[in-house]
Amino acid sequence: MAALLHDLKDHKYAKEGESASRAIRQTLSGRCPEKLIERVIEIVASVSYSKEARGELDVSRMSLEARCVQDADRLDAIGAVGIARCMAYSSRISRPLFVDSKQEANAQNHFHDKLLKLKSMMKTATGRAMAESRHHAMESFLESLGLELGDASSKS
Image (cartoon, helix red, strand yellow):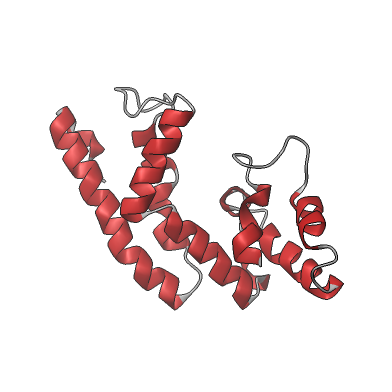
């Protein structure tokens, strides 16, 4: 359940002002025992990349289920599918795909700001193993992009 509902909290998908726990509770109420609903809410609360990056998530206290859901979420964001998702989302929000500035928000910089960090943030052995090849795919993509753009700084 947590794997299916974890993005209810994501700002890209959530309704304005709606909390993840409220949305999960509304979705599962009457369909699942209260104990399961609470467990799903707890797991979903521990998936956030931003919370972990800001030090607001105590990863040492995460359950195995939360670690698995978090790794799965991050694996979706990297590799060939992650590259496609980054480009599609960047286009959707009118974020440039690449620019000369390292300061301006763009898809190319998003790899360095977040996506290339995900491999080292995996919590399970399986997640770490799966992240290896996906991370390499992103590095290869960025190197190729840099060569095509004539920008050696794109190398990871």
